[in-house]
Length: 101
Image 1 (cartoon, rainbow, N blue to C red):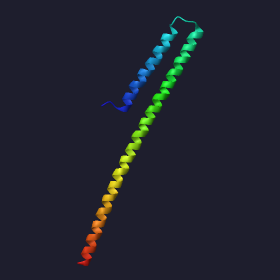
Image 2 (cartoon, rainbow, N blue to C red; image 1 turned 45 degrees about the vertical axis):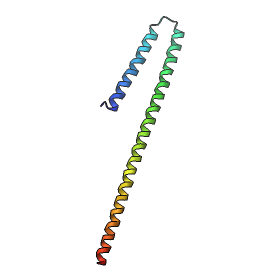
Image 3 (cartoon, rainbow, N blue to C red; image 1 turned 90 degrees about the vertical axis):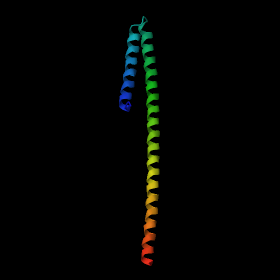
Image 4 (cartoon, one colour; image 1 turned 120 degrees about the vertical axis):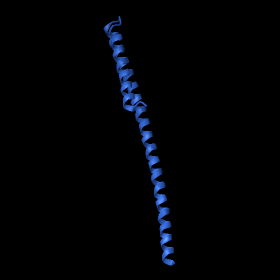
């Protein structure tokens, strides 16, 4: 299974390659400097917005996973506490029965 860090590294590599490739393509395109600068600015803004969206989605997914993990841990903890309480009551009852006998 691929780890999250490796997957992130691969994704960042592809994203960076795309940015560099786009910049080179725009620089070698036959257009006036003014139009070229506008295209570079527009593409940069698009990539920035896409990066923000991906970051937000990743953060949201991570937050959901953490919340689910915490909920599961709380469920296990509650179950464990209930079991201990029941066992404690059984021991108390056994001790009371022992003293009564």
